[in-house]
Image 1 (tube, rainbow, N blue to C red):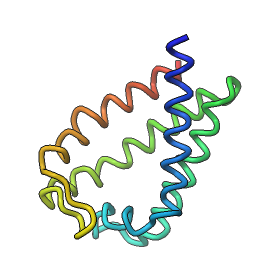
Image 2: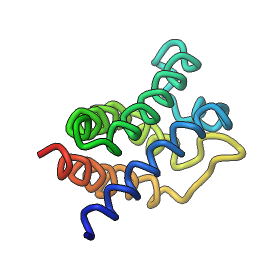
Image 3: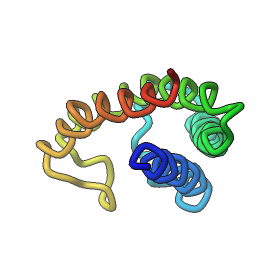
Length: 122
């Protein structure tokens, strides 16, 4: 039962996070390191990926694909977390966190999220 509840939480979280890429795109542009071209395209692809993979988690037949897609996205998001650390947690005037939170987002949180998604890929 706990695994099913955890799955619903995770799937819902990614769908909402993906939608947020379209509702508040400027917040995400600030997270994209400047050495990546086309931040608008990256934001759209990331948002669509979170929505699609989150939705795939709801169905047993597509759950493994959704979980592995989320693992790939989380790995691809690592440069954004490193960039946030390099910027001492302040990405813009509207997005500024203590640097220790930026570190926690990278490690351990990112790896916990990857492990959580992998749990459903088995």
